[in-house]
Length: 160
Image 1 (cartoon, one colour):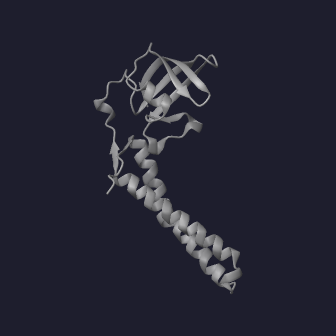
Image 2 (cartoon, helix red, strand yellow):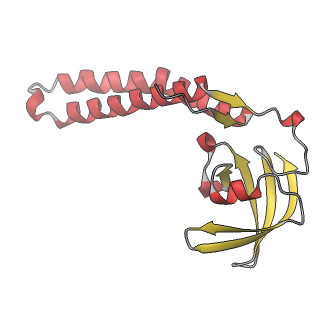
Image 3 (cartoon, rainbow, N blue to C red):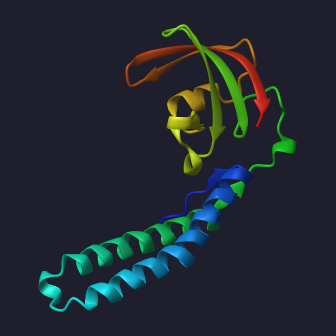
């Protein structure tokens, strides 16, 4: 039997997952149940695309509920008070200089379950996140990224 993966998360990440789970269980389930009732009123289920769509949506939502429950059950919340504030770790906001594009970027280092690269929340398990972990301001890192090798200098480390 495989062991459940521990999901290291910030308190903010846990809260967001709990809110999504609550929304899916209360609001979304009711919406889907109503869609199924309406679709059943259309008659013949073999040619009823509304019914098929509602059942597919129901399956997706139930799968997501199970996924969220498992993530929350195996979550380990990082206690930011026990971590040094000037060293990059989960919960850190890191300002780096990207040498390739000659620009400054801020990354929020989070657990893999709450990563969202579109808003610069990167996982501690990602190539850049793991290379930054444990570093202090002034450190220069080179890391393999999909486009080749990225070079970054840590300019500042703070807590979110």
